[in-house]
Image (tube, rainbow, N blue to C red; front, top):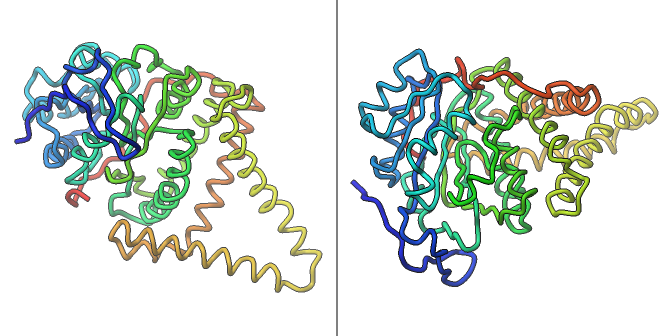
Length: 382
């Protein structure tokens, strides 16, 4: 089993020459893995075993059980021992994480803490890639590459979405220092910034809000490690998918509102402003301009050519996603990509009306978006 690594020498980075670790971090263990969960008995042991197979030692893996009424804590203890498992009263994901960080003395003992969802499946080189690229002189937070576990039609669409989002958008964000969200399956923070982050935010999407806090408080840069791959579960059916994207977009607009995005002269404001403009331009084009053009033009040749070009690009990215995920079935989801796009656009605009115009969802109840959604992991590491 791979043992803990103490880092007391310069480490290398893909982004530049050797860097010197800050003195206050130098003698700490490099990386802790913290897994929060509520009613995760179906997946918790698979996730822990996946982390060990990916290079993380058992003694540096911690689980916080947020008031589960199943065997989550018992199964985690069977692998990690009681000293690495904390059970707390039902308090929500963010507060459970905060309590675990304090209980396990994460800040005092570790340079970095990696927080992962309880349904994660890590690539066999995942943690070695993280250790290789963690650079505390350059970054205060890092994220890896998310892929979809093999599943139904929703997972196939998400595979397309993840591939385009990370191969193009995430690399662009990394290059210009505007990573807008550190996703739950692969979020890693330098421990000396944790006391500057509000983990008890009232946002429906804590990961997005915490990422915005890093930008707003000017804590430092966020890096992307494309070679560190992890797989995550997606909704089992359309009803669950609709519920999830509703939460995501409501949380998105909460973050825009609460962190006053667009009101300051930071790079993240410019980038998010452009992203919002692009989305609304697409909505106006789809819901207003295109119907007008169709009704007022007798010839549909131009529209047909435009659609065929878009379809060709979409199909190409579907093929790239199939290769990346090693799932040829992803290509079969191609016709439904347009349906899911339309659903996302509808929820995006509806959430804008709810949060920004009607001022709803200013607070939310304690809970977990994963309730009743988990299914047994049937495939190994990526």
